[in-house]
Image (cartoon, rainbow over the protein chains, first blue to last red):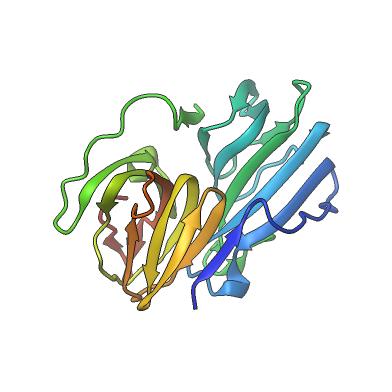
Length: 123
Length: 123
């Protein structure tokens, strides 16, 4: 059975997580699907919203699918827009902000586990 | 230093691989960037083209970014279009075809290694 879902169908629920503002998130492919190594999550940040400013011991790969905003990475701000692909390396402080009068839509991938077998949150 | 590249910038070179027709591919984030666990590749298939019909001992996660086509998966054909997210599980025969009078654009992710440390081709 092929796992096939569309980003435009269904709803993306609000993310309840400290340090976020106006962020929605859903797992498009993850551990529950039997994904062996990495999990693909869809994020939407309303204009003025932001993800947590944090770091963790695993990476992100990010695909900006719509809108625009800013990523803070290792103390510097970078504009992001549709089509941008990013690698957020482990242990680097980062935050995504929809601070350009626009929504920000992106996919964010994480490994399903880190540190020799710990379950990655939100995978 | 943030790794940040855009899908719309630069060129995507032809993929020289047996069993393909009119496929271009480039690695957007991969082993050369220090990606710890998985690699993100951009594919473009011209109308009438196809990727190899094959299977391998690692998974794909796929994001259809434009156009339309067909994925054959485990002996069945499924239409694909912009916004579709797929999980292609290990050891399942699959092929992507631009067979609907349109180009097919997608991102295809692979783990950077499989079978306890073998380097994944094209990662």
